[in-house]
Image 1: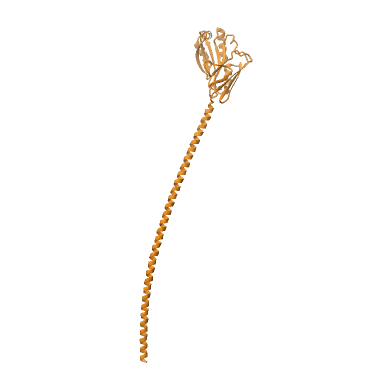
Image 2: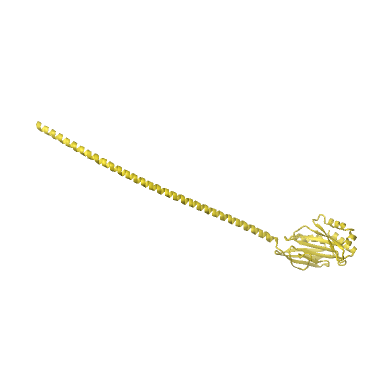
Length: 311
């Protein structure tokens, strides 16, 4: 794909020998650390006419080249300083992990480059792209005043870089790699500041944990209060019940004491009555006995007198 498009691009430039055509590669970094790679080309209408015949054929060939790769192809136009209209496209890859960026760029830019990509840091990200030219992939670019750029688009403000800030976006840095010679290496570096989404994830987890802990504490406190209220109610009920039992026992004691006193009084009266009746009976017996003795004495005396008179 890369070799086919580059060959077509340079052949078109050779035929037309016109300035203003441009070839761009780049990376669009997301806040989550993954990124998309892209390449873009612009050609003047005259170059396209000489190379493809018409603009529709140009775009058709481009879109066929990316068919089945997962890339999205976007068309655009630019007004050249010469007054001509330049037609272009941007092919953007799907989002991928950092480890896949350099291999994907390698496929786009071809075997003439050795590419490395590094993205490190937490609150700030240090991005480094290294390009080493092992061939002459851009032969004819300077001769025909063609441009080749590398751009990095970041999710936050760029703190520092060794490139040029883009006029179109404060978060985009541009490097000119058209003059990169055989064996030469260039490092494109930048530092970008943005809040890592991991911070929000950690903060969110901590917030959830705090909320759960608060809920647990509130529930435990409510349970303790409920248990304390129940214990207090039970204690109060037991105290009231004990008081009622004690009061009932005292009443029973008092009633029992009164009953005992009444029984004692009634018993005492009965004893006294029995004593009186017994005393009276004894006196009667005594009287009757005395009378009987007297009668016996009298009878005995009479008998004695009779005996005496008979003698």
